[in-house]
Image (cartoon, rainbow, N blue to C red; front, side):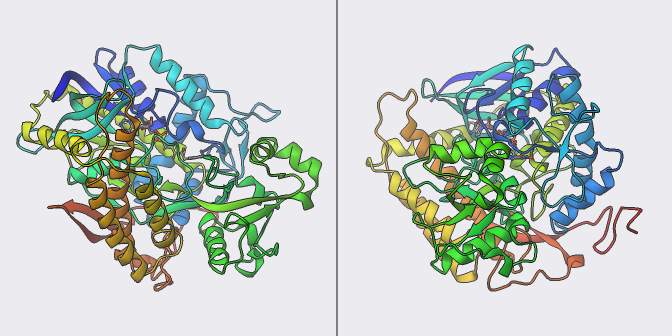
Length: 573
Ligand SMILES: Cc1cc2nc3c(=O)[nH]c(=O)nc-3n(C[C@H](O)[C@H](O)[C@H](O)COP(=O)(O)OP(=O)(O)OC[C@H]3O[C@@H](n4cnc5c(N)ncnc54)[C@H](O)[C@@H]3O)c2cc1C
């Protein structure tokens, strides 16, 4: 039963860069609005925006331009991004970075002449990544959280969204069903507008970087609500995840790209450097390319003790490495590795979902009253996200959503929630208490393995089909695996069960889209279809759950600003 019903004008799911920017902008537009941020963790302490190390892409320098940032984003995304979304990203990033510095109080690193320091990041033709050392995300989220705390914005923390609830006629969103994790009780929050900003996050892979609170709940809820998702086959792997054995959560965490940028070597199990035989740029090739070469080496069986490869920095000089990569050296030392003088085990690690809910440049979705921003939203990055465009994406579109939703709720009333949908959602959350108690760990391990082996860096038809049937079996087994009932306050096994459900459902969407895309592009590589095909015929894959079945279709990319072979750069034309 629903223990508590709350009403609010504007409900925001998630407190990353997207959620907090939306809250602040909506409040600024109309301080009299009732704004509620509901979050699975603690506000300011969870999600991936806090984990941002590298920085924020924005065209600030005189010699740079929004056209250049735009072209880098489109070419990096292999001509798959929605160009109107990408244009909004690069233009509004300038406003947001100024707001972060001048209104919200972020301190970013500066040059001796007082200008903001911008560093190089892979895939960009200009050094445009603004940062605060390598702790940029902490600076951004701390300042955003302080500003939210200082305002009359309601907070529901450790409050997990479990279903989007529509009105009786199925024509609009009426609210969201939650589990209050502190008590285990259900709550229904009705709202005139809802923002989905739960941050995606490919945590269904054996090796992954995102925070543990992210289990694709938002994407799974969107699928179950019948919304179209796009580009779900596009999963970004970061080449150098730390590999320190199964007993530590440090495995999978990122060793920064700068190590390769500075001249680090990747070695196989025989301690031989292999990247030069794959690409002239060797270790400095793009993330997708390096990850693929690494996976190929690993498949050949030449691996490190834990089944990965090695990174070696010692040829650059122990003192230099210790000085330039202090944080990374310490992280490796914590796991028993000597980065400055020895070898460190690494493995490609799932980092980011380019795919997400289809949305318009004003953040609206197909479902009236539902908006989306940040990593839950699809279409901004296409087949590849540039490092530094992730946090720009969440802050830019979070702010847009806040502005638009504040205006939107003026004309809207609260809607009555469809009682049958609430009942269905409740019974689906209660399912594990009705089944015989079992163990979730083996199911999680199987999910990790199937996604890593068959829906990961290198894919093919047979592997994807076999993965889909394993995912279907996993979903069924999960349904039959019970959780002991009793005290439901912080019942983490129950939440693990719900996490797995979201992950399996989203994994099926990834595998289905990957099967539907019979070419190779950016992060998606099909061994049986290695060619990219003509860029001018670019299409994206739309996935939608209909009558319990995932359907895919293709949609042409609209080249609204520039066509393949053209550029917006005047000096290059
Ligand atoms: C280690 C790491 C380093 C990165 N470095 C960079 C970088 O240098 N530059 C860059 O541009 N990008 C980087 N990224 C990517 C970037 O962090 C993300 O793209 C971006 O922060 C996503 O913002 P978001 O607001 O969409 O989601 P997040 O910041 O992840 O926030 C999601 C929020 O949703 C909440 N949530 C989840 N499920 C539920 C639920 N069911 N109910 C309620 N709340 C829920 C979470 O608790 C969290 O508060 C990095 C990512 C990682 C993991």
